[in-house]
Length: 176
Image (cartoon, rainbow, N blue to C red; front, side):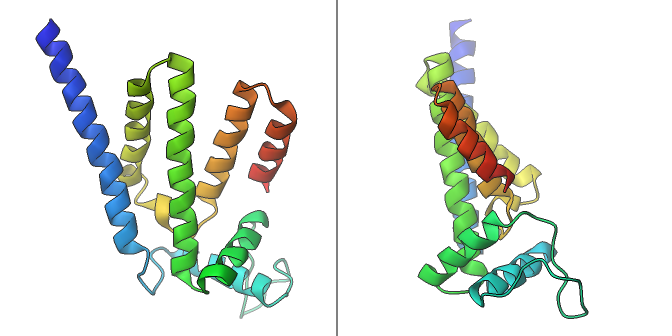
């Protein structure tokens, strides 16, 4: 029984390391690709470009621009990142990668505090990282998803820490 438990533990460590490393390597290799990786990226980039040009994001659709129905926070955060790192898909992908890494940290911290086990936290991060492949690689593309997930996890952590005002603010930001 002890040998089975040890083997299972070793398997979980290796699998978690594999999925976390897989995400990091693939995301870093995909980030500088100069074209869209998914059809949504170009529409998100258009909205960020409009924010950078101080134009309205939500306008009547035309043959040149049709706004997505996503809420505006990501576009403004993306514009800020593009001002710092330069415009383009790469900057927005690095934003998503950073948000995913924040998710890894929050999942680890939440799980560790809930279970009193750093191993459980590490395995939870490995399970989350494993969904990268199942999600068709959507953790590192220029989309609103990972910023929203990071903000929701931060809000859940704030609730866990009984910081309700911060939790409310983070949930509101996640909605935006």
